[in-house]
Length: 82
Image (cartoon, rainbow, N blue to C red; front, side):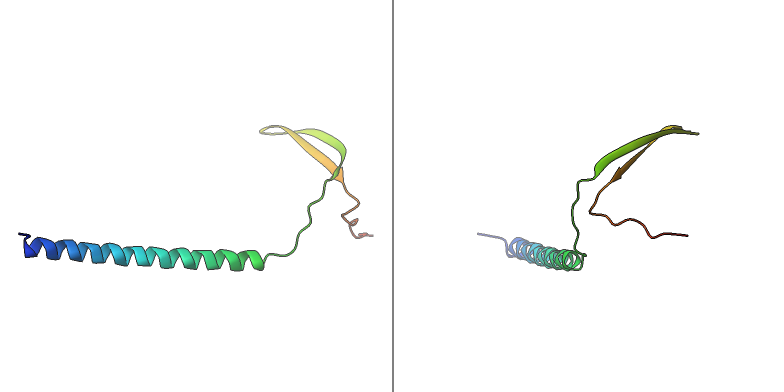
């Protein structure tokens, strides 16, 4: 015959686990909704393949620095500053 005290403890542990599981599911749903909202508010973007230009090699106090210059007809030229 089962001890009523032990059975009561097991039932209360099951209730706690159930409550934790429900809270975990609630947090997952909330995170999913936030992720969907963040993705829908992101502005439209276009992927481009730039054309190679040239590379500048210089030095800094930490070592060599390479600056790659490229271009694309998909990107408008900068505004004239003069």
